[in-house]
Image 1: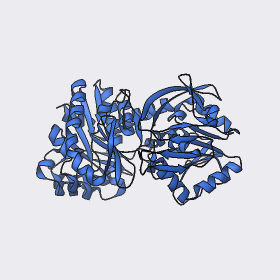
Image 2: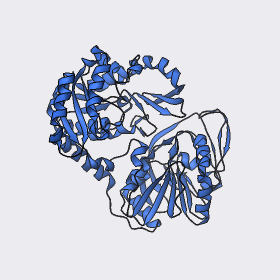
Image 3: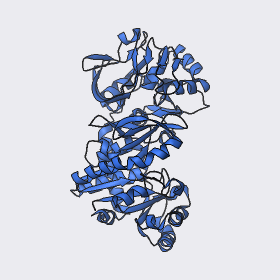
Length: 481
């Protein structure tokens, strides 16, 4: 049985990080290991080598395993477009948009592609480390489940349950899960992990024994809080809410209601010359900001309305009048133009929404989704960019005559006549050290020499070391073998 599954007592208990660390630990043992998440819900997606999309957390886990991300690693991805509906991605391809109540009727039919993808990974690797979604304690969602115990039982994969002591009540989290789940589901659980501990671990010895006594499950360790996780690509926008401090130049980014693919900001957070501020709903754009970034969004027209409801349109116009810089990426780029048209209703009701008018371009939404990795060259600095595109819609207009970059000989993006407002469809641009250094110089701050990609590898190794020191990694891997 070459697989083990990490489930959690709730969302954000650290499942993704545990799986990444275990993947790196298994790889260092000489095992061919692959990550797998049957179902994920995230608007922060990664473009795969086979031209599809998966959750960004699974792309990071693939990196920890030394693999290119593939669609089989996350066969079902839900991308929320509204409070009631999500785009459904199956094995990397969009199959439609479903309202929440319709999703529960459709969900059982997706077990087949989930098991198909899992079977391919299992056949190709020594070990598959599976991540659950949410919590198996959500027993009201158990019928037709493909993400937690439904998958574990269908695929016959042993489960280790992770609890988050940092949020408090970890004994109740784990013991309570044991109390409410079905006995047959409970029989799949081989043990538990306590995650995100702060302080002297020995102080939890009695609590650890209580969990073992009340559940009958074996403990696989108490894992202390891992602060270096902040240096890894963020999966959730809430991970970005704490501003970096100390930099003389302020970069503000707008936290849209459907923000997507905000990993563009990860390298900027690590630059000591910058203070990166997340502007939350109801807050004004800081007057001291040198640069305002409009990130990607899953619903451009919806988040244009959201932006205006916060008064950010007024702030942006004032920022531009003061000579401030503006960068729109993907959906943010579309917003900067004169209009966004969705004649087929791909992101909501058909119609046209006026844009911010900071660029002389117009966008029309089209059903063909562009999913591709790209090698580009930033024209102003003549530096290379490795990134990706993930969007519907095509943008054109006079300001496209001043492109941001060149991709395969074609112009990409647009720039205002004064050069202070720029739009681009290229995600991941700031991971390129040379481009980022040139960009920082254009903002008036010196680059730090940060080697971003090498830093991610260093942190993944440190994460594996952290788990080796505090959890029974050998025991966890032995469960699968």
